[in-house]
Amino acid sequence: MTDPILIDIPEELSTDRTVVRRYRPGDGVGVFEAVDESREHILPWMPWGPGHQTTDDSEKLVRTWNGKWALREDMSFGMFDKQTGEYLGGTGLHRIDWNLRSFEIGYWIRKSAAGKGHVTDSVKLLTDLAFSKLQANRVFIRCAVENVKSCAVAKRAGFTLEGTIRNSIKDADGRLVDLMMFSLIPEEWESMRVV
Image (tube, rainbow, N blue to C red; front, side):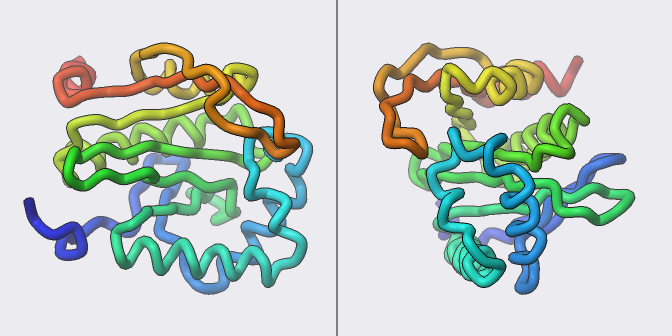
């Protein structure tokens, strides 16, 4: 296996409407504005959300995410509108296991941009990156059972429902939540590309 730190990973991917790119210094302002606009929309599902009390808090997270990217420990991407450049939300490859070549895709989107296809675009871009460039053996998405919209994204992107993991995480209020586990393996991804 090539040492992950030596793998050249594209820092920007795009569709006709969505740009997914590595965070840069200064992106914290956009992150803060998106979180602040969307607190009720995302915080039940994002335990890290309450940590965004100021733009400096968000900038610190952006720079931390950027450092983890450089070390290939975690690869967080910002999601942007291709036409306007507006910051829409976050996505990325998380819970990376380089030995197994397993990657989790996570995502969230600001309330005003929900339902416009940006999250599905982002998931498809990162799925292709994981399989084509990083030789993934498994790409997975975990969604709280009650987060119907997030689970719908996984289904639209062609992921297979593996099952429900009960009492798997705590939400922002500390309540235990069941998660639905979706995944793709190389054979499924290849068959989707042919269609």
